[in-house]
Image 1 (spheres, rainbow, N blue to C red):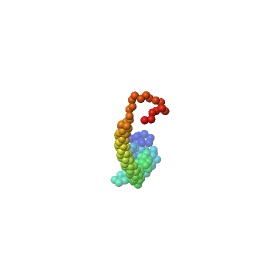
Image 2 (cartoon, rainbow, N blue to C red):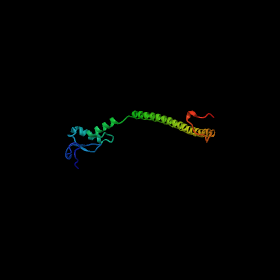
Image 3 (cartoon, helix red, strand yellow):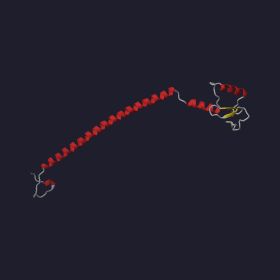
Image 4 (cartoon, helix red, strand yellow):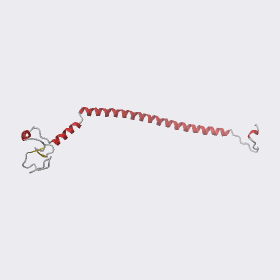
Length: 150
């Protein structure tokens, strides 16, 4: 069966070609700048059960880029430690806010109670002041400066 070349897309039938072990595409050895001796060495290596498998330049390049981007275990541990420290700080701040909210709620309750007590005291005092008021009738009203002294 003829497969298209992964580089030039022409049929690999009847020509020297090699299959990539990663993407499984066939490539003409000329298209990937490989000679017949190198092809034979790779074919012999591929026959061994524990032999290295050949990868095309595209897959090799992709693999290298992937490895470069992979963080190391130390990097991951450092990130976890930083996140753990941030989480501890956030928990501490949250606990502080909960405590502050509790104090403010208690203070609001106390102030509401004080306002209620003060309103009752004011009403009581207003009633007491009204008890001492005298209503006089039958006396004509005079200007402010000419009030009678009682």
